[in-house]
Amino acid sequence: MKFVETTYNNTETIFKYANAPYVGVSVMVSDAGITANADGKKIVPAGTIVGGDTKSVLDNPGEPVVKKNTQGLATGAAGAAVDAEGVLANAVDVTHGTAPGTMLIHAFIDKSKLPEVPAAEAVAALNMIKFIV
Image (cartoon, rainbow, N blue to C red; front, top):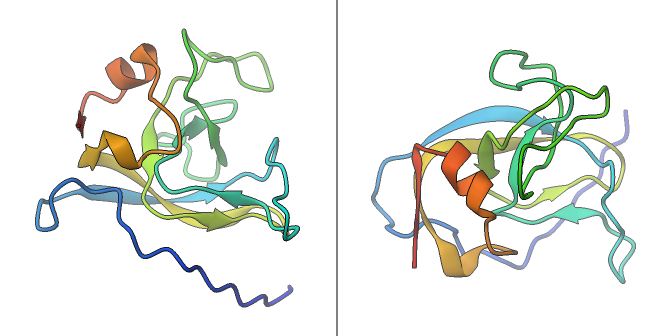
């Protein structure tokens, strides 16, 4: 196991209201399809809409999550249909492979702080997350 210390300069939160309740679950974030930045780091930004790669991570906690902000129902690596299941609460460094993170399944999120505009189908699938402008 390799220990790597990473310093993030962003302390900005994706939450709309500082004291609003939220529910998050621990997940493993996959490094699949993540491109390294200019510093050679593979960072999955806070606010990324995610879901299980081949099956629901909520039913299968060992399933790593991947980006799921797509139009229509996304198809996982094994051909199984998997929809958006949550939003990453914090940036996750996957430079050295799959890494732990927190996936929000219930929250009030500031839409302007997301790395990309949520697809209509992703918003519909995330019925316990309220995206607010």
